[in-house]
Length: 68
Image 1 (tube, rainbow, N blue to C red):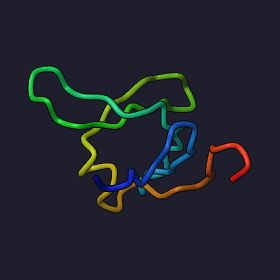
Image 2: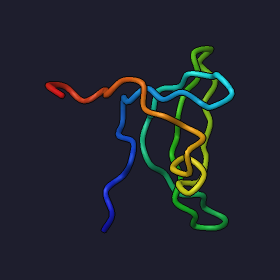
Image 3: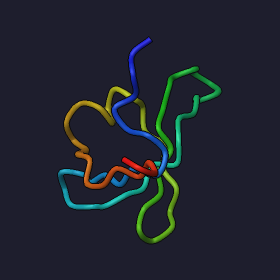
Image 4: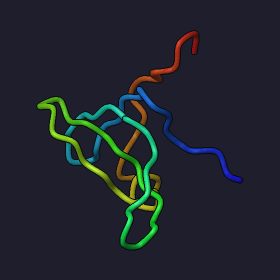
């Protein structure tokens, strides 16, 4: 199994400028697609398929893991 590019509590930046904190991985019930859940600076929650999160449109800004 491949390792996730992003982990819970990581801070990522979208190429268009938004900054978000990764909440964790989830699954869309209707399609069973693997996704990331993430929260914007305004508190808005979002989900996005793993393929889209890991295709280069998001970059790691801060590793949220303790002792990392």
